[in-house]
Image (tube, rainbow, N blue to C red; front, side):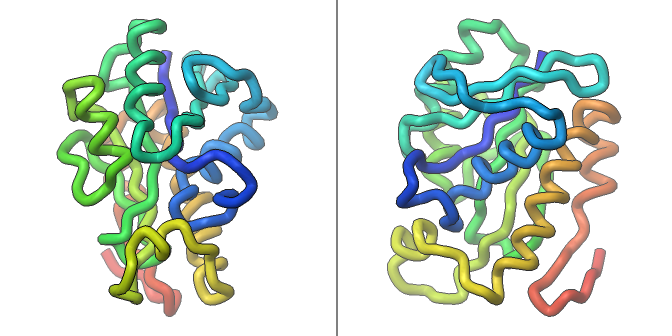
Length: 195
C-alpha cells in the first residue's frame, strides 16, 4: 500500500493559492483514477484507488499546513505503511515556477508542512515531489505562498501539476530512482527546458 499525501490548506480561501499545489495534484491523481477524495479520516480527506496493482490512499490533511504531520502520523500508524511507501507532494519557493523535483529522502528545506511531517513521524526516508512556485517577490513569504496564482504562473504551474501527477504513477510503477531520472528536468517560465 502507498500513501500519497498532497499538502495544502483547507477551505475556499486557499483553494487556488501557491501553497495548495499538493492538494491540486492529489485532485488530478484522483481524477485520473476516477475516484473521489471526500471521506474524512485521520484529520484528512482521503480516497482509495489502485495504481499498478498497488492499493493507494490519496490524502489531503485538513489540519492546515503547519500541522500536516499530525494527519500523516495518524495515517502511517493506522495503516502500518512502510516509510518508503509515503509520497508527499508540496510547493517549494526555492524552485523556480514550473520546475518539479523528486527526491528519495532528505530534510524539509524551508517548508513548514514538511518540517512538521518529519518531526511527527521521526523519519525523513520517504520520497517527495516538490513543485516550484518561485518567490520573485522577496517580501512577506506567508502572503506570497497563500496568495493567488498570477496569469503568468498559470500555464507553467498547470504543466508542473500534471508532471507531478504522472511522477506519482511512475514512482509506484517503476520505483523512485527511475522516476527521478525521468522527471527531474528543468522547466522554466519562458518555456525553455534544460537538464
